[in-house]
Image 1 (cartoon, rainbow, N blue to C red):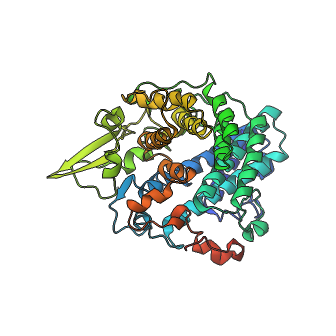
Image 2 (image 1 turned 120 degrees about the vertical axis):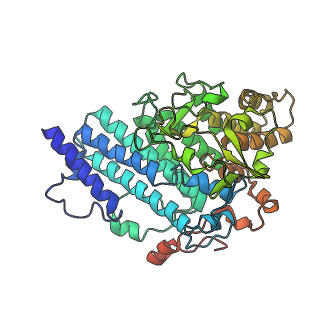
Image 3 (image 1 turned 45 degrees about the vertical axis):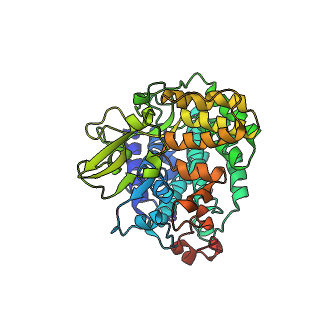
Length: 456
């Protein structure tokens, strides 16, 4: 009975959190039908329930959700056209690169992601005084800290200098200023190092729906690459490649199946049988698109023989017009085979190819880019390929491999200083668009978030 009462209490607690202002959720008196936060983290069942709420929030309402950053950055760059011309949520303005600080979609990304950071912090604070077994305490702490680090990293890449929030103290957070990007990255490096000591390589769930130490290694490699520390990134990425946990998927038709051993982390749909968000949001057939379609520029970047064009892109013909949609996730009803993939081994391979190339280890980089090329039916790049060609082909391969996934196009171009290439493709693109504006609502509430990002 005790476990049942605690479990019910945790659910009530988390339900209240989901509908209450995220900054004040834990600063109110505990209702009589609800257990104290400390009790939640003294029971592994309720501690796991709190952690599950964090993952659910990421799936439903954060910049990692399948209907947020993957869509927003794809239309913001040059991979996806947006046909939602009458939308009032600011999506079409993102597509036209007409950003203003009051854009609703930008605020959604900012606010929802900070809400999940707050929830991660509430778990981290609650677990500190927990009487759980050390192994359980380490796992819950490590997962919450790693999730918080991932969210901070993508916010920093999108907005630049941001508040680095590591507590649930409302008064402190309400006046928190922006942390310089270099300091955010330094903080993340420290946090991820802590994750290494707390987490194991082995997954706590065979479906890889929870993060592990290898996910922390991937994130640390991303931080290193943002800091131009290519040697450190190489060492970290090789640790993942050499792990027996992962196997490169050689069958192009199986890349987006949830059972793949190439998957580092994926998110399970909300209900059994639900399609992934990615399977639904890009789908249209027998009619002209009313929301999204792949750009001609992206489709033309594939050769006719590329198996990804044949298997991951579908054409829709209406009269004399042809549009193209992403067809990576195919199960749209009674889904039992697909989860939303956040990180997969192919990203590790192409990051490793990139960091080796940056260090002039050109021949060492070739096997990692050739793996995705040859799986797609393309010829391998030969030994002796020049650095300029290799840099270009890695960029092209990233685009062909990861279109509509996790905002790859934007972040890959940004990491390599190539966002300016969009000027010739998108009429409204400006150099300051490498960062989004800080939402106006938050600037009005907290003057310490000023100055606004340049250009806005």
